[in-house]
Image (cartoon, rainbow, N blue to C red; front, side):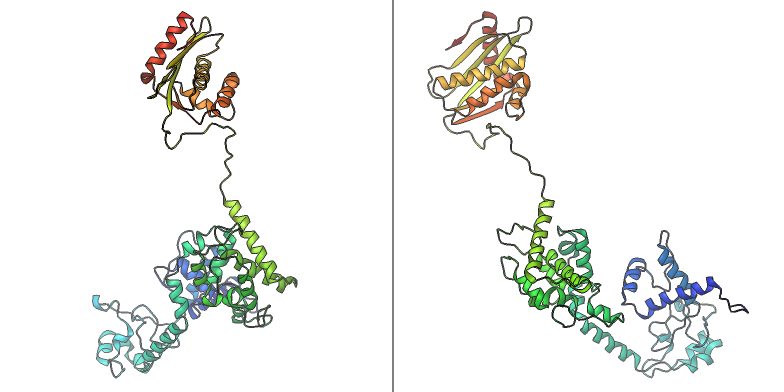
Amino acid sequence: MGGLGFKDIQTFNVALLAKLPWRMLTNPDCLLSRVMLGKYCHKASLLNVQLVKGASHGWTSILAGRDLLKAHLGRAVGDGTEIKVWHESWISTSTSVLPHGPLKEGDRDMFVSDLITRGSCDWNKELINKILPEFIEEILKLKPSKMELKILTFAAVATQDLDNNNTTTLSTFNWYKSVWSVPTAPKIQLFIWKAINGALPTGENLQKRGMMQNTLCVHCGLTETTEHLLLHCSFAKQVWKQMPLASPMDPDDFPSVASAAAAATSWLCLPPSGISGDIFSWVVWHLWVTRNQLVFEARPASADSTALKALMSARECIQAHEPPIKFLKNTQIRGRPDSIPTGTVACNTDASWRKEASDAGLAWIFDSSTALTASNGCKFQSGVASTLMAEGLAVREALCHALHVGISKIWLRSDCLSLINAISLVTKPMDLYGVLSDIERLYVSFDFCYFSFVAREENGPADSLSKVYLYHSVTSWV
């Protein structure tokens, strides 16, 4: 500050930034500490962590304040079990003093507790005089604690007892299964994560932050905790009672949101609710929305309407995540059957086409263990535009012949794969439309009818027969 009272803004800003790391050191359980330390301090403490490349502007500012704070920090000696002799300021309570001098390899990681005689908890003068002779007077003026070890032990046990349920639950909690893989909206996944970690602005948390107004439950007037609002409040119980669950759900059976979320992965909704997946996330979300509308907009809602909104939202979410409906083919021809029925007659068809004259020879051969009045057929056809058309005509004629001789179950095989694929198409090729339509109409006249592809090598007799009748221009059903 200058003579006129103006402050150095840059220095003043760094001083203000130092308040942030000081808060994180003195209150490591606050939300700021948990987020920042959890992200950046995996391998070192806040006082020793280095600035990494790509760190956020906020974290860079915190470390700038940390560096200012670190230069003026000192440790008060209790039992000395956590204070390193050579790396921390502990000798003086008024100024920052770091011990210095030649170090032996075995003394590099020495703690202050190593300078204290066990049992009596007095300073080991001989050891101090050997290692830090220049600071022996200042050190002897410090009086280490004889009770702190016990006090710290009891405090740790008390803290463990208070937080035992929550710590145990979260240590075994499957975040991926119960939160992040649940098929719900991403904002609701984040909401559940906050609820489990106690980060929602409920009345209890607002009280901890010094906000003393409107901190009670808006439904029943009791203390508003996360568990109370989403599970144990009388209003929440009414909403949960409306859920069409296969097994009745009692909110009192779940001491925490985490335990309820874990159990919800196995819940089933009864028909005709139309909900085949998650319901827990939508119920707690709409409980929270109803609470906020009542607090901030004075819009009350009944438990029935809240339950109905949760069910509708869950149903809409499920429908949005369903794969698009594949419309059934608008054709009566079925695909490959599971098995061929007994008594089915196999029929091989083929066609030969002469491009110059647009003539075709059609042939089909029935193969059955039972005696038939006709075992094969052939036909000469003029005015055929393509080989594919000739193959289609051969199939049509074979079906007509089969019906004529009383065959009710037929397995029709052709060596033209393009035709077999075209038969089952909804949109039929324009040049084959009439022939394929006839085949579809004939198909429904059989008790069983199946079309399949057969290799040309296995269709030799039908191929030879079609060529014979092409060049002799003869039609015959034998």
